[in-house]
Amino acid sequence: MLAEFSIAPLSGGSEHLSECVAQMLRIVDESGLPYELHAMGTIVEGEWDEVMGVIEKCYRLMIERYPRVSVTIKIDDARGRTGRLRGKVESVERIIGKRLARYSPHAKAAEKNKTPNTGNERDS
Image 1 (tube, helix red, strand yellow):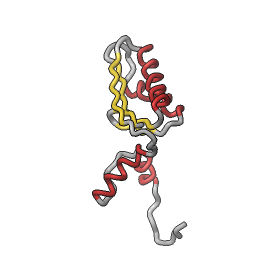
Image 2 (cartoon, helix red, strand yellow):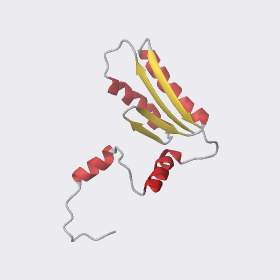
Image 3 (cartoon, one colour):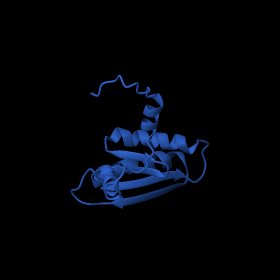
């Protein structure tokens, strides 16, 4: 299943939202489940109990720090199917016939640090 979620404090605290997101992303990352962070939330892929366990841990972290939080969860549960986190996007790209724009800080960093091709490099 895929679950997109976001959890945000509605009151109290002096932390910036990005600090809260970073703390929750540690939980998501340590789960070992495939995930993707985007500007409006996080998508996690796995079995129901695994995914909901991760979301619950994130919720518990936030509700311990803030008296009021907002939780949004969207679920796409296609039993027995895996690899959908990337597969759904790739399916649309096949239909369109090209790769679509995606935010990837790793790709941007790699491109920034890329040395110019002088023509002397060998393909590996």
